[in-house]
Amino acid sequence: MRLKRTSLYVSGSSPVNMIQAQFYNEDCIVYDLEDSVSPADKDTARLLVYNAVRFHRPENKYVLIRVNGSTTVYMEEDLKAAVRARPDAIRLPKMESGDEVKRISEKVAAIERMAGIEEGSTDFWCNIESFPGVLRASEIAASDPRVKALALGAEDLTASLRARRTKGGLEIFYARNAVLLACRSAGIDALDAVFSDINDLEGLKADTELARNMGFDGKTVVHPRQIDVVNAAFTPNAKELRYASRVLAAVEEGKRLHKGAVSLNGEMIDKPMELRAYTIIEQARAAGLDVDTEG
Amino acid sequence: MTTEIKTFIIDYMKTENKRTTERSSKGRVTNMEIKTTGSAGTYESCDAMITVRPGNGITIDLNSDVIDQFGDAIKEVILKTLEEMRVRNAVVEVVDKGAFDCVIRSRLQAAVCRAGETRFDWEGEDRK
Image (cartoon, rainbow over all chains, first blue to last red):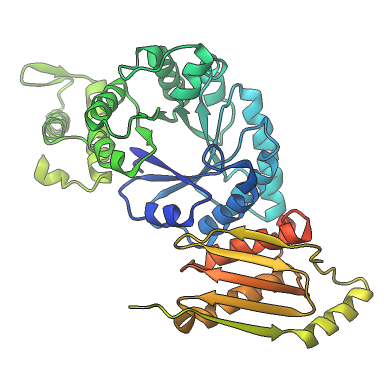
């Protein structure tokens, strides 16, 4: 299992930020060519991100490049650079339909063929950040084998809804569920939206715990100080780990004794509980926790 | 401690330029023409400001506070990048602020494209 608890956006126009980002604890780095890059710097940022990812790629990080959207004049050139840079995935902003993803996939396939890169090897994360995107989240998630995750973007979404963005997040509750269900249905990862107030770490913690309880796999962050809070929320704690270990031990014991059903503390252990326990153990191992000791 | 900043200029590839021009006349090589002045980068830490202007042969003006340790390596990156982009005539001014090779390379590529008034040749990148 590869953890995707935190995805840190780093501007593609700042070499110093790009270098510093390698030394933080985020699981994923997203080199950004979109919102954080001014129109005058799009060409220079594109080449900077290409060279950084292709020739100076950070180790032990899941590397993404966020390109500009399909309605902009920048996307074609961005894709030429991003595919050739060979990141783990390209993050596509403001996806609103499965057809849109398929059209981009065809362009990427043409670039892969031209560049001698294995066709189909470039993965996508699709940002869902408008009401059409939310309404078609399932279609987008299942549109192409390249799609490996959906990521909710709350700021643009609430603007498109004419909603007010609040810390409680009630206005994006439906969207969170729609994205999550689409991801689970397609068997891909679900990434929660940015918590914008970088000075409110308590608020961030509560927001992240909500997302984790809902089922999300990780969250996008915009500042390094948010990383440890989000990582902690998406890492199993000692109590969860202990319980998961006991569930799996009871299952093993049941198999050894050829029991059809097993229980723990008087509670029947069913298949979903077993799967949840496996997931927690895998997450803990991926996070570097000593599973045997904790268990 | 005062950091000593050194600037030096090198002229390079006059002979190579003549040879390539001869090949160009036979249609086998198309050089990148530097038409105007183009710049890319910043003066911030870990970055470089690179300006490319029309010239005769290759002239590099390198200003870096790590020139003693990395001057030769930086020059090598510049010359290799110019060669890859088929630039035979240009004045290249580099103000380095401790940039990694990949940053120097990308800033120079962007400056050359701006000075050549052209887009980056991605298919050329595939042939390397």
